[in-house]
Length: 89
Image (cartoon, rainbow, N blue to C red; front, side):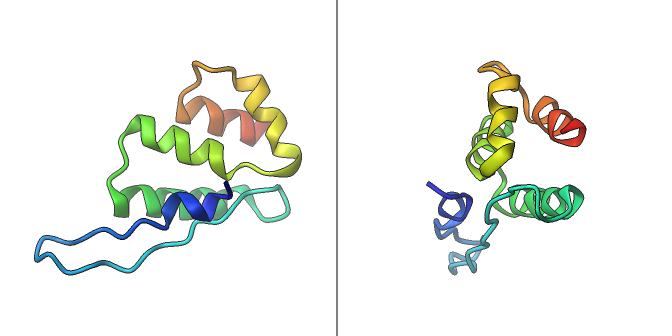
C-alpha cells in the first residue's frame, strides 16, 4: 500500500457534505523531509488522526531507503520518535 492509499477515504464535514480527499503520497528521501512533514501534519490535522493513526500513516508513507528507519524504530515507536530517526537519516 502506498501512502496515498492511506488518505483516500472520503470524510464529511459538520454539514454532512463530502470533503475533498487529500493525497499525502510517499517519502523516499528525494524531496526535503520538512516539506513531507508539513504535508503529513496537514493531512493529520485535516482528518483528525489520533496518535495511533498518525504512526500508522507515517509508517505507510516511507519508501525506498527510508524503510530502514522502520527497522531502527522497532514496533513500539511513536510518531515523534520516527520523525526524529528520519531527521537523523
